[in-house]
Length: 522
Image 1 (cartoon, rainbow, N blue to C red):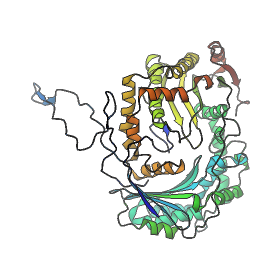
Image 2 (cartoon, one colour):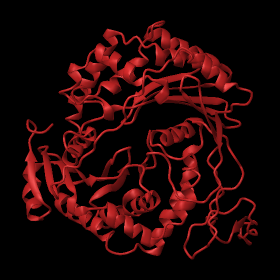
Image 3 (cartoon, rainbow, N blue to C red):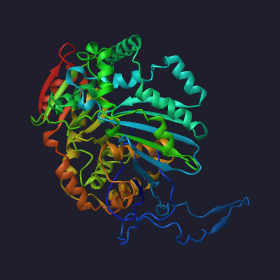
Image 4 (cartoon, one colour):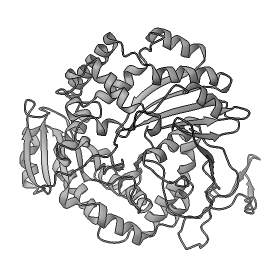
């Protein structure tokens, strides 16, 4: 069965499982120049998505300079957002159960194809944490027909870029290639997905690289704190409490057999989706995909459900001692939200105002007014389960405590009253304006569609985003803040010089302070 998606109804929603507030994250679809849903009712201060055929403004008056050069008498000002519609895509089901999604992007001859296998690191055995990432990395190290060098050479002859990687929700392999060589590249991708050999020496090399990487991360404050912070907000049984690629305790136990078993468990066409984006004019995409994956038969897709539980102990402070550190890395946050929340657009605007862009409240206070940091940033990392809400900043050691006090106060203030009209306008206009820039190339479109698949979102989700954001009110932002920002539950994690900041942290009354030394912290 074939179904073409072209949404036309104005309703809310935002792109895949992106980290809200970052100009990310980590495709197929045809460009459509017909209209995007319009915001019918104009309100003072509301972002308006205007049609392309709107009458242009008359040219501004010009003045003559003494040197004879003409200049505009006014600076250029931004106009209303131009119409944008996410490219249309077609969804089909092949005989072996594989879902095929194609997106025709005229004029883009570099095609991008992505194969998503349902299930990622979140459903791997805890004692083998990291096995899914190693499985993905090892898939391009050799197949039953070619070793790693031969595989690279085959891809280079096609002018193709071949890769495989794993995330929390899926293991994927992809290829970018000129459309004239797509058929050959597709066979190469199928070989990598269906016939990986997992050479023992390459598996051992990749495993050792990960172990060395974990050792190096302990010496880097930013990576160190990104390891400790999730452990303070999730219970140890939750997959999100550990690093995506495994830990010092689990990675050494991973051998070739574990990779083979992981691949066999995830590589089922019934739970897989194949996405092709680019100029597909005259290209028999379905037939080519059918032929490349004809031998792939289902064994039963894995269960993708898993539990995510918060470690709720109220506000507390964890200080990882790094003697003589000139600055402190700081993370403040708590259990956040899954991607499937109904008030996503209000949360997007909320995060943008709070800490999601350069002129956010937190950046204005901590960087511009106080001079404590080069930048403070917040994000809701949305996954199938509730990812973290986190505030990130690095501050001078001597102002660690006051910076944290100020940051917590901003988290409280966003919950107390509606945001100002100029803040709301600026945030909505920013989100509406940058949205089309995320999908300029085929890989970006493919990745966006992959987000819809991973999070089980409707096909018109991306078309509904801009009008829904433009319709967010100050009351919507306040309701989202009161529901989703909880400073009283926040975990504060610091990597810094304990000798210089512990006493001040305790005097500030932020919460109970626990100091971890090198041999005590993970």
